[in-house]
Length: 491
Ligand SMILES: [Fe+2]
Image (tube, rainbow, N blue to C red; front, side, top):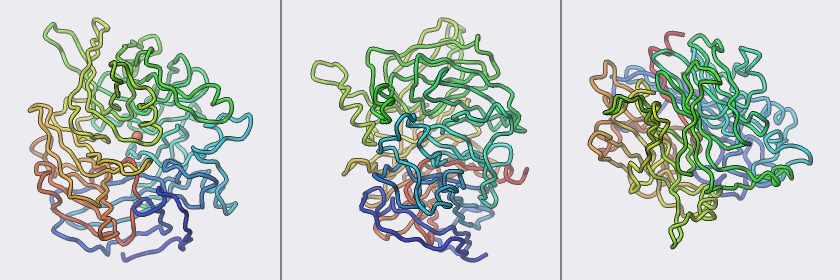
């Protein structure tokens, strides 16, 4: 199959840094195997790398925020050393309405919402944030919480909303859910501005809704991710909220409450409302979990370990938290992160917490997905470069942590490259947890082109073993997943 153009270009020029250079939108939906390769694609891994991200189809109404663009999936399929690339918009209801009107209908994050409308109700569910594989389909999700869209993994055609059970309708499901590859189950949470502010649920391997429960929070919150272990799920309640008066006026204005605790709901995977155990920890805010697992401590007590990359907590001279600086960092997409660990003792109800690494600045942590919920030795993160302008984070390279040795290896090829979250792709018949490759898109700003890089996960510092040059830019984006070939073929 050669290069196939599905949609005619609709070029436009907008003066906004989040619509320029590696962030600039594309307008073609392609399917191609006609790809130039530097190096050699290894033949000992098979499957599909898929990444989601924002790509505006219609010129934005008012100010543009990087998070406003319509979701577009970019998929790279590797099979026995051969490779193909495909990209498709997620055909959301909001995009269909825009297309019918020939213009963008919804306000963006930076715009004031219509009177008497909660901001979340006016925003378009762009489905632009994360993508997972479950029950033979890709599931595309949105960071503000909304309906999940199902996508055919072979064609990237949108199949419609995930509403197999009527109870799923209207739930504002978060961008980040968790798949247990060993059981095929899909754990998710929903959140929003209305009581009880959070729900937790589980779909089984066939897509049946097996568990759904309200999780009452003290008010509307901004959780982003969750964690799982084989027996438990961990839900987040951070002391970060939207100012309620601003919300009523149709605006977003972040507030951080250092006098509150971070709270975590630990619930048995298929538990009930009454089995939720709440744990408290120091006030903090985190987007992404790296992994979680169960451990038995030296007293024979079960502890849940959760690792992630929260924002660093900036301090004033007197040692108190610099709340304004933290809020400025979060609201301008600043990148000030540390690698952190919490341990929740199920016997005593106590939390122990501490820094894993506050030297490297990393985010978008990934693991070998087979170990989701199980103790992992390795995590793979995006290495954050210094931001030169506000609202333009620089995904400068990759880092691999060895939690057993307490060491890390980093790789960044120099100025001008912008990486994507890099999922782990196992080798056929892997011999160890890190026996495989990291696969990611890289915007090569020197050559002004997008590439796919394949890196041996055991030799990160050596850089890519293969670079696939793409005929069209893959705009800088968000989250990704690796789908093993055997999972694709099962369906
Ligand atoms: Fe995220």
